[in-house]
Amino acid sequence: MNKKKVLVTGVTGFLGSHTTIQLLNKGYEVTGTLRNMERAEEIKKVISDRVSYIDSLSFAQADLMDTKIWETITEGMDYVLHIASPFPRELPKKEDDLIIPAKTGTLNVLRAAANNKVKRVVLTSSSGAVVYGKEKSKRSFTFNENDWTDISNKKDTTPYFRSKTIAEKAAWDFIKNDTSGLELSTICPVAILGPVLEKDFGTSANIVIKCLDGSTPAIPKIGFEMVDVRSIAELHIKAMEEPKAAGERFIGAAGFLDFNDVAAILRAKYPHKKIPKISLPDFAVRIFSNFDKAIKPILIELGTQRKVDATKAKILLKWEPIPVEEAVLACAESVLNLNIV
Image (tube, rainbow, N blue to C red):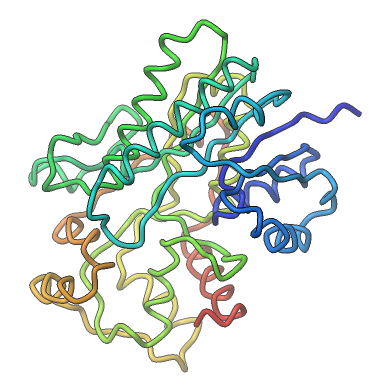
């Protein structure tokens, strides 16, 4: 049987590893890229515990800024899932440290894919490219795939959201001018929870970890649209396989929860754990952000509820996301099992 070949960039990441597991279990031949081959054996072990076809997985070392390597590793590929992108745990001093690799890396992958006659690239963008850069009166709104973040509004964007917006727009501009026949679909996930596979976990898992580890005495009045990583992995594969997904942008979300909702879900499951109940006033969150730099990026969520509509993916791709409460509990169970908490 002639297996279809898929290149997954960022195989060691939270979403990259889950997507690779699902691809292997569907019978695809997968090459995963990573920045350092020293991580290869570790991630192979994580993935092999969850698949039947580990022999169908190989690895390639690649840097987003290296033009030549992408020409080599996209050769012979049927599809590329471009998931890798710089994601900081703190705001960078220079935003170009995020923007340049995100945009240049995306264009390097697309150019190589076009040159090597890859059928389709599925690009991981972000809801950060959809719901930000708004005037205050327009933030608590329900957004869809027709909406874009306005990167010129620095008060309501972060360098990361600007990087994702710039990279996705660059991808669509590339496809518009490309004559190779390469197809593009983009996925815009919200905050991704679900089961953590190893100690190198996605940043969004901190929403659950901070509730469980006793480090947060009070809860900021902030909320996000959330989704399970397994559902987003599935959405990438559906966007790769479905002919109608070519040229389309999809939001991936399962529901909105504020941090109090997350804490309540966790308290019901783990009644003996010290999970905070008190809400933290907005002014206190701003003060604490001066001492904990990881809080800085979420200050723009204070006093707003940005919601999204994922109907398009549900109808066009018949996508049914795992319930958001299940995503929270699966994340909690995994971080406890891995002794992260």
